[in-house]
Length: 209
Ligand SMILES: Cc1cc2nc3c(=O)[nH]c(=O)nc-3n(C[C@H](O)[C@H](O)[C@H](O)COP(=O)(O)O)c2cc1C
Image (tube, rainbow, N blue to C red; front, side):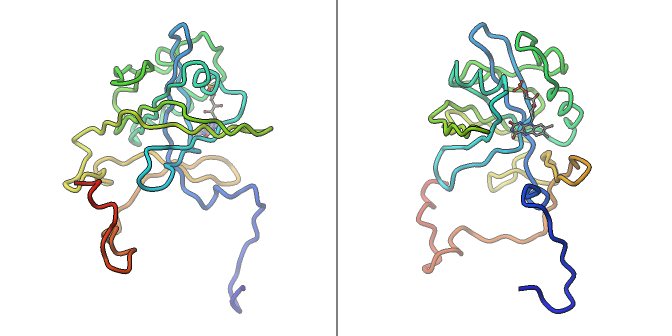
């Protein structure tokens, strides 16, 4: 309930992402002939802890979706803010036969487990294989299994995560006019996973050793 004197704006339901800051990643794929494609995606989430699954929401009319369906492989490339100029450069409606590494001036980084290359200069490369698709009239949810995962060491902190100040991952907030590109700020607060459990122990701790 609204507190007395509190000013609140009502937003239209479709504006949900105005208050959900999202990661901006580049998904690289290739078609059966090896033509390479890149597209920025922000509807990406890991499925719980500790699965090796991720979910990507996509519109039907995407070469990315076509390629994933044909080859069952894709790479989620996590860029630093410095690559913001490549977002619109890779978001254009290029014909399927156009190599988007060439168009956007991006350098390929060979993947370990899948055919589509990753993108040089990113912070991390998440190689995935298609596991399942939830097909709806308007959209498709792609479930991918992570089969290889690399992070550039220079952006890693001592506890194995990314160092937000050094890495500055590319993220965005949306508003009525468009996409505002932002990054993370460390607020100097930390809690171990165990803090969520009554006995203070994380039942998944062994996985991180
Ligand atoms: C920052 C940003 C995030 C985007 N996120 C998504 C997304 O999550 N899902 C989607 O279907 N399209 C998304 N798009 C749109 C696609 O990137 C765009 O339509 C692109 O041209 C698709 O390329 P493709 O046909 O080569 O796959 C996004 C665009 C931008 C600029």
